[in-house]
Length: 343
Image 1 (tube, rainbow, N blue to C red):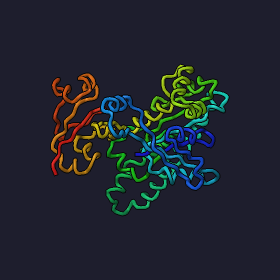
Image 2 (cartoon, rainbow, N blue to C red):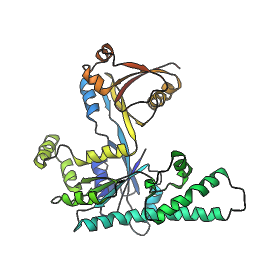
Image 3 (spheres, rainbow, N blue to C red):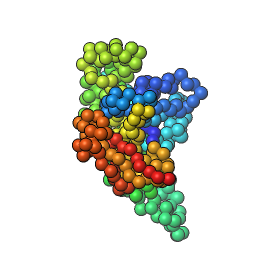
Image 4 (cartoon, helix red, strand yellow):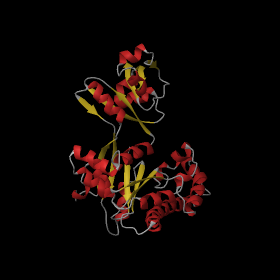
């Protein structure tokens, strides 16, 4: 799992990366691509840590990548280093823009670059396939020959591939291309401190399939320099309940269809990250391979039920909210799980 941060030069993408991960990417001069982990804000996890007061806490984390590249080969560096990213955070500069139209032009400039890159890849592959017309095709060639014309038509319209209703099998068939515009994208508009409405107006102009969040990186960076007590006072003075960067992290987490389940105890309270739709044995395997291999049952209680029953397993069991689940159980966001296994 990885989120790549992209944006035009001076858009504020490196500042956002530093705010979310605490890694000063601009100070690491020898690395083209800098990676860092951001803690996923979760009030449920915080509450569980308060209840158990464990020796160790391990919140969910999401990896972000920032590419430091300038000059003629900057785009090549971005392509090489973010080719494996599962999703994209596209940072758009609104803090130096005069109006919404200018912000939209900056957004479209990079979007069109990504669409063109995908189109060139499709055209090159179709050209090679056309030269194989008289030869027997492999199963992979046949899949490409069937799907790519549809993708080409979409890209020639100037539209991203993520807008197409492709099946999971079709997406799997073209995975080797690492298309930019097939990946989920979150647009983050970097607004001026004195006029956040400019970002709001831009977000309203985005297509309905695009998710977006406004943030003033200048304010967020200033906030990080303050002691925790003063941070709260600063946010109150702005009429804000939480820093915007926390919303960006949570939205990025959801962008990849990830959820969290918890293991709890006096030793450790930990949030485990899984793909939505994962069954109990697969979730157990995230904890340890042996748990998946020897999976028998999972003791499960939902977070809300756990809290409603006094924040104890005994209370949840007495109320009939603690239940045993087998191999077909699909883990839900916020489940508190204890795995029974035998190896």
